[in-house]
Length: 251
Image (cartoon, rainbow, N blue to C red; front, side, top):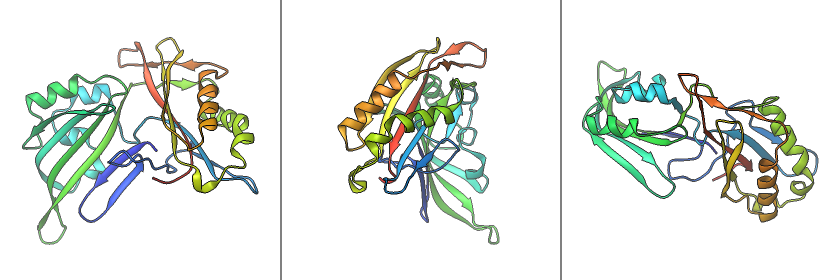
């Protein structure tokens, strides 16, 4: 569901959302839960950022090179970068700046610093990698999707495990007898404000059953308990967007 993409010529890895914005739900942390009882469908719940790969706003603002943005495990064998691109992703468009080396140019730096918390970005680059065979290299490509997160993220009172349990309990009657083949990965976004309130609760993709979508929208909108808001590096409260993923595995 939440997307993380690292793509090269020999294989591809996507988590939660793939690189062309199809949705895939995978188990990547303790909050992603496959709720299964005899006779019931597989129905998965998760609350997280839009993409698995993340970077704090402070670290992004301090980035000078492509390698400063990419996770170390994906850069350790890279010897050089060419044609590096950084993009801010919007709902139906993107804004991109192109560079010709690992070092971010002025336009790329300006673009990245214009982002806000919960913005989503994509980094792509053609690179040379060490093959580990007598100093030989090969050409590869990197495509990485990231969500920009606050230095301290928003959290639900009682923890996300408790929140997921609440959603399961309240929706089990409606999800029990669904046709497994018709279930799609559903997605609802919402913002935890700097005061701990919720706003902009929106359906992004349907689970395939409008009644279930409405149920999930209502449950998120009227959650019991409270949220602790996110904060930045200066300990100032900030808004943060989160996403409820629900449904089943698949694209």
